[in-house]
Image (cartoon, rainbow, N blue to C red; front, side, top):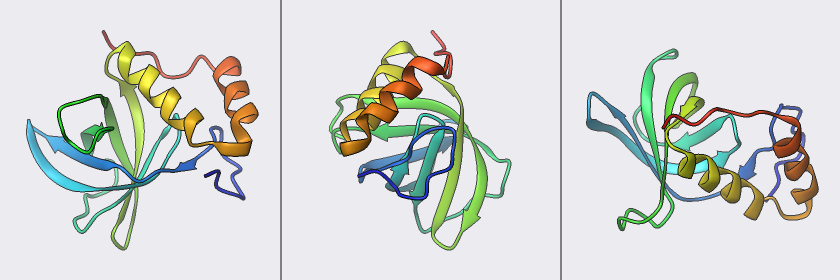
Amino acid sequence: MFLQGNNREFTRVKVSIHVELRMGGNVVIQGELENVSLNGILLSCETTLPEQTPCLVFLQLDGGQGGPTIEAQGMVTRMETHKLAIQFTELIGTESMNHLQNLVLYNSGTQAYRVEEEFQSHVGLLPKS
């Protein structure tokens, strides 16, 4: 589902999948994805982290059953009650970029043309090999 009133660089879409934030190799926060864009996520969770906290983001596309995962370096950019906004600073591996693009495109509905234009007009985040 496309989020109306979106004046951001990248289209945000509503998606509900499991997310883990890790620091130092340990899972520090688990929650559900509220929305996602090529720039980052809004995570619904019970725990918060201070703004500017770096973390590893793992979006588990199959509910944590060992299947495809989007992995990214991220930074907390905003805290709300039971929510964290995380900006991606680097995607880890080309598969993560491909999975992220597919996730956003698949869930963009009638805004698919806009998402495809974003793919074409932005170099995007460079994947880390």
